[in-house]
Image 1: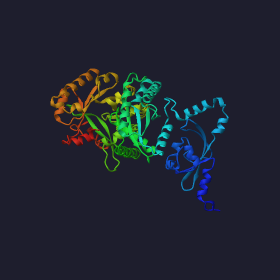
Image 2: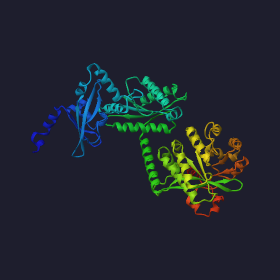
Image 3: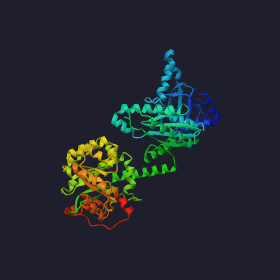
Image 4: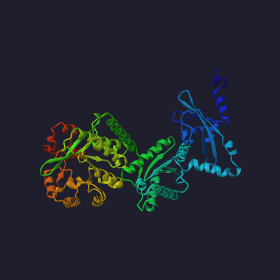
Length: 565
């Protein structure tokens, strides 16, 4: 018998509205398509307000897929009350999910002594909605506040805040110190914002504020005040280091989803970080476009790594005077045959911003070692670049030394270059890696030397075997500029410490003469030899590997910049 045609859909709806159990139907992503009156009352929303909102966001902890048994969860209401809910989820025809929610609070409360019931409910609310470290709203409670604001048609701004370089505090002073900084930061934010806005901790060192009925200009002003407040307060545990905040601002209005709003704020925050930190950025569509491009680039590089689309080019390092090649720097190229072509400056920044760089650096090292095994000629020596992110890979040193030992390669044939900026950013990790590699017999150099503040101090702190003078000092070395004095100082100090010096960006014969007069013995650049595919180098007789390549004609400045990476 067709029950619906017999009693009518309106009668069925009325029956379900009178039921003791709350019902809701959602799509596979949890967006509400229908609900009965008890469910609307439980959510404290009208049916119209709840439509298309995320049920998992409004009732945190409910199952997001069919379950065979009921799931017990807790729900705090705006009146300070607390409910225990038993939730069941069943799959319906038409790619829908049916949620059945029973309020079992009364049965739960009967098992608790009435004298302790109030304290018990308060503790449940705290456990359900508070971040245990800071006492602020947790991620679930904050996203619920945002989703409820959207459900009732409210507008405003979501502000996402992130402490700059927080990892350094954890690494240098330990996680207990980091926890103290988080608690003090929460106190600063709470004091400056008051109780009129929903403030919470999303996780780690990331916080968020739901600024109801606030426009972008006012939100930026609030964010700047918070940023200045944090910078002016010496946070205990930071070792007296000046602590700064980066912020992302995303406007929201009725019709938006909380996931999209949070994603937009995160994109704006990422833009603040990329622009140098300690600033506030308002979300623009271009941030999404940039991120989409970065994700596309990462997908291409990931596929290339898996399917043989990466290649190494070798750039000769030449001994001035004799024109003898003393080694080659290996440069990564993306050669996956896809359009558009991506040069190193277009794909390396995206790779170095994520964990994929760990696999890429290991691939480069592994390929270099395999090549040295296949070509045991002692004159073939490689330098490989280590990204700043890989310094965070605690197993990288073991990987390198294990591969070298297994291959039986003389460690001196392999050198590693770390940019000075990366080394200073993660000084302890750079020192540890340098000590291990140098102790094994590998060469290790500071790349782009001179670009950082206090460069000469780093020569004392890091057990390196050489420096590569930043190309900015070499560019005008033949014009009698101040670069001459700086390069002379680097050469003299390096010589006194017994470490080697290499100059890069050599593009004219006059630069070679100027560097030689200053005592630089080894250099590289387009005048001395451009990068070529490693396979092309290896295809020639090994005697040619140590001869300086034929001089190349001058090239456009744009082309030079493209191939320096």
